[in-house]
Length: 320
Image 1 (cartoon, rainbow, N blue to C red):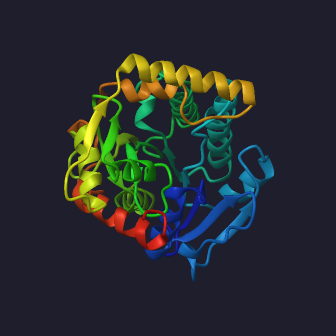
Image 2: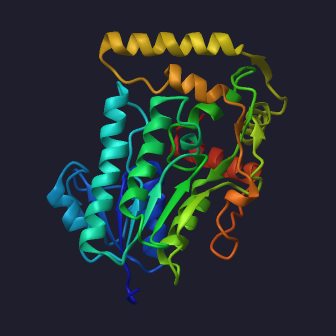
């Protein structure tokens, strides 16, 4: 790899992408990103990045993104869509097009595909099925390229600038909190997730294979414990009362949300498939799934991570 390696990134303007670009630049990489419009974010103040205008469906933009790259981190993807076909068009077909372009124009470059733990259970939702299909599409392109493809399956990612898990902190600040899901789930602070990706992209030797991410407790947390930790992080002196929501009620709400979204022509994040994901009992990470310790080890546990995130939410005015 060159002294100033070129790392191309898709999904740079998303929550993880914001932190990833900063981590790569700090590590000395020359960052090239794909974006539909010139990105302007305060978190990138002072950073010098190359921007390729376009999206995953734009073949010429993909060629400009991939040409001459030493590594490409594919973090773009849909987390909500009106139907399976739309999910597949981006999460499977977009990944396949990107992988083919990189393999053709930069045959020695490494490709890092950001998937999801949901890909382990593709039967649960259209999203999960599309993430598994995206993995398989990348593997088909790199079937004979030993070590050049790394697929990474992160769990719940949280931290500054994240609006998705903000709901957990808002709920935990109330005296009564609905408790949905009764399994265990792993989590990771976005700083650790960005550090892991940077380490893979810039490692002296390519790291091939499929791995999962997790914080200092890969065995994960019960949702009740996660809510109580969030309550402590937002400063509650007495723990909230947790009100368990039966799985059947949660599933019925998911179907209703899917139906209402179809009627309105929208794409709700909470659907029947998402309800099945929430009800799944095991989103933990086994030790054998983790990245090798010499590549990356997470350092931020849930208590410290939630405290840091809640403090940022307050400073940013997102949380009273």
